Length: 172
View 1 (cartoon, rainbow, N blue to C red):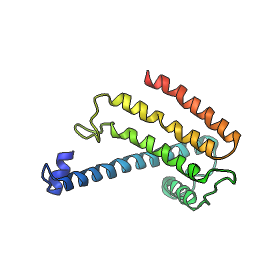
View 2 (view 1 turned 90 degrees about the vertical axis):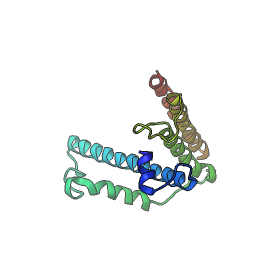
View 3 (view 1 turned 135 degrees about the vertical axis):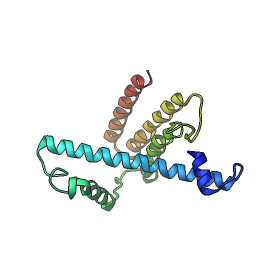
């Protein structure tokens, strides 16, 4: 795939600009695969749960097949007010989601999508993926701590213990 992109862009092998452009193309494709996959799975989950619970949603509203329901949820999410608790450490509270996102997205570095199409070819990629996905816990704990509430911290610790307990069978 990398050779195809280089041929389409007319880039030579040792060209730094070509490597940067090819890397950006790979990143954009990877982001779109993840985003479209999430969009489809959210739509399927809403459609199935709407049928089971016999409620309005993607079953009867939202345009043809309910596609617009997910788009409406995204617009609603972007339009919401960004609220930080009064006793919270604002910088840490706003940093926590970025840490969780970076940890979950970094796992795709070692995941091969096709023959020769991997961002970073690592001999022990399975261990790298497990280690990086374990870092997501730090964002959750940081959000609980930064909120300034002991109950949020307790909830974050509980979620961290749950994630770690699920990682053990995943690793096995």
